[in-house]
Image (tube, rainbow, N blue to C red; front, top):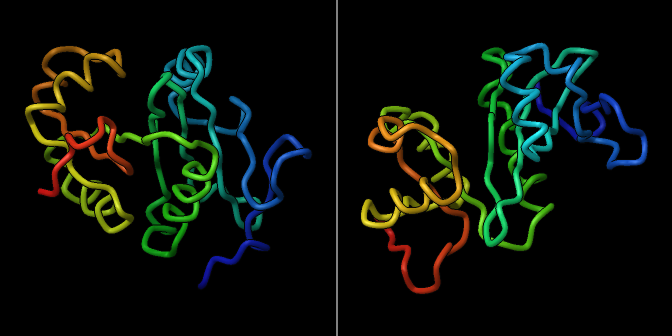
Length: 161
C-alpha cells in the first residue's frame, strides 16, 4: 500500500493543510496525562490517518533558537510505508531554524530513520548541553540519549559522525 496525500485525512482543524492536521488531545488516545502537559508546554501535534485509522503522530516544539521533534510514533502496521517520513517533512516545513531530535542511544531504529532523512548525530561534546538547554529531562536520560540535528544547531559545530 503506497501512502498518498489524498489517503491522509484531517483529524481536527479544517483551516490547516488537508493531508496533515494538528490533533486534538482526544484524538491522541495515548499517554493522555503526559501529552496534556506537553501541549500546555507548547508541543503541537500532527497526525496522519487512513480510512479513519490513526497511522502516526509527531509533535513539534519551538524552543527559541531551535525546534524539537517530540513524541514521534508510527503504528507498527504502517511502518516502512512513508508515514513517518511524511510527518517529518511536514514538521520540517513548519520551521526555518535547526530541528533537533533527542532519543535513547539504544534506539538504533530511530537513529537510522532520522539519519536516512538527512539528520546528523550531534557530537557527544555538544549533546549534553543541548539536552539540558532544550529539554526538561532527568540527568540519567541525558546520559543515555543522543541528539540528531537537521541543520547545524551551532554554526561550524556539528560534525558528521
